Every structure is written in C-alpha cells, then in structure tokens.
Image 1 (cartoon, helix red, strand yellow):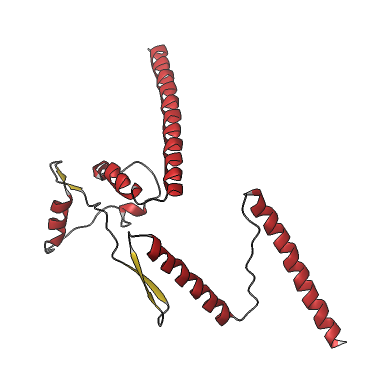
Image 2: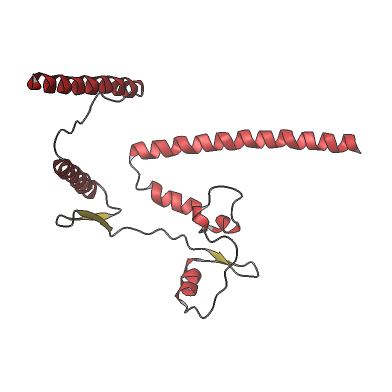
Length: 195
C-alpha cells in the first residue's frame, strides 16, 4: 500500500508540472517564443554545476564574438570578471562661476588631496535619483558622442531596437510638445480673460 501512495504522490506532482508547463507554454506562445523548458530534477549541487556550465558557455561565447570586453573565468572560485573593457568618459563639472569643466579637468580635480569638506543636500548619489527635473550637470554630459561610440559595437538587432526606441522617444516628445502648446494657449486665454 505504501508503494501505491508514493506513486499517487509522484503522479500528482507530474500532473501539476504538466499543468504548469501547459500554462507557461500558452503564455510564451502569445509572445511568439518557442515552446522550450528546462526541468531540473537533480540535487541543488547538480543544478548549480549545470548553471555554472551555462554561465561559462555564455561568457566564453561572448569573448569569441565581442571585442568591447574580455571576461576572465575562474573555474576554482566559480567567478567571472570583466577585464579590458572600455570606459566611457562621463566626468563633467562646473565651477562656481558657471564655467563647464571637461573630462581632464575633472580628473585633475579628483586627483587632488582632500583637506576638508562640507556636505549638504541629499546623501544619495545623483545617478540613483528616481525622476524629477534634470540636474544642471546633465546637459554637460556628451550624450551624442557616447551614443555614437556605443552604437558602433551594437549587433544589427540591437541597432534596430535602438532606432525604434529613438523613434518612440521622438514621437512622445512631439506629443508632449503639442500638449504643452495647448496648455500655453489655455494659460494665455485664461490670463487675457482675467485681465
């Protein structure tokens, strides 16, 4: 009787797995993806080893097909480290009088010893902000050259997606500009009516 109970439990798990797979396949089929699934039935150690092999395969393949970065794989520590990557210059600053500082001037300032400092405002770095108005330094970042530099290393699919994103952004920008124009007309009419 014990054997039959175990078989029932195993059959119930298999039926649940099958139901879950059917639901998952239905969802990915709507998105046009292939019906594929990986099912792990081994120990956690075996799963981790399989995952490590997959990670190694991905980064070895990346190293073969890309030149922007080299990933060093440490088999003993089971780590992957990015090396020989190209840093993009994004340091910018402005003096108290409003003169913009270039990359080299910012690096020279950062290399100076700190004698004293004061801190005010929010302690979170600017790049962690969640929205709101742009920071005055944002307009000093050379966005176009950075985009051109990164675009040169994109695959054709990535370049196509980037173009779609640009078109969407320009379309949204135009829609917002039209809304702003409409609001300005309303404000002008309201101001004239009030006077």
